[in-house]
Image (cartoon, rainbow, N blue to C red; front, side, top):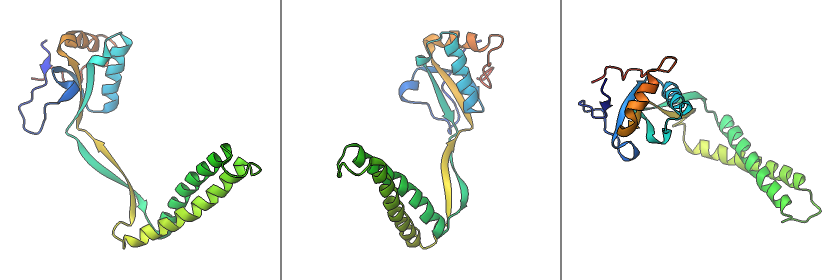
Length: 179
């Protein structure tokens, strides 16, 4: 079976640039975990994996809404972040004795956490109030792809295909027979 070169005829797919130039699609999987497993399989069999790339095709962005963002929740989240940052700075001040050496580093960390929580909470309240209700939800943004291709330098493609088609190997996914 001949390896499939990374030249697609449809207009939505793009040819990769940079490290993927001159590489051949040896496998295609519906999930990143499967593509990762294939590259791990190649690595386990001493294949030069520095000659491979995993390319996501059909990328789309998404935003998972995690909940309603009230003024009090915004204040609480900002207070928590402020407390962590304040504690870190207080601990560093105590560690390097930048403030009177008689004051313990842990006590400075506690003071820093309290100060950071108060300032963070106030900034969170102010920040949320200034949005005027335009974004009253919290979310996590991400990217996903329709498929993940494993590309290998042309010189090493036959060996990669042989390893992926071996018994107990992950296979080549949808790349098998693809023209």
